[in-house]
Length: 143
Image (tube, rainbow, N blue to C red; front, side, top):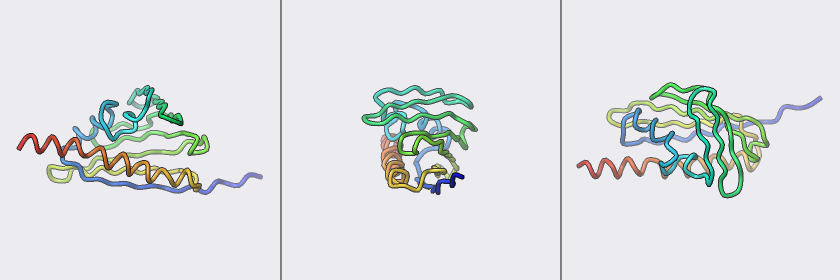
């Protein structure tokens, strides 16, 4: 008899100075700083339902498949790495219009309740602290 592994969920939100369609598209662009696709030394990205991704960063590979793609409001994909103990976890991103801005919410669920699993919160905060900066710079240039 095997016991189910205890899992956790991480939630990170940022308000971004751009409309949802721009934020959604930028998130899927490997050239955009602050996205996981930008971190890899090698990135394969096919962002549509049943499309696969593979990231080979400085130390560890990440891979998964897109399960939902509803531009510009929502996307979902699986996330597998040694830090998920090789198990599929799920990343859900929503992009909600908030005036002229977008509330971007990232929820990563099904993470193992281990030190490596909990470290995903720090990782996602790192990305989502970098990602909005380009939109702030763009809005400053337009003024």
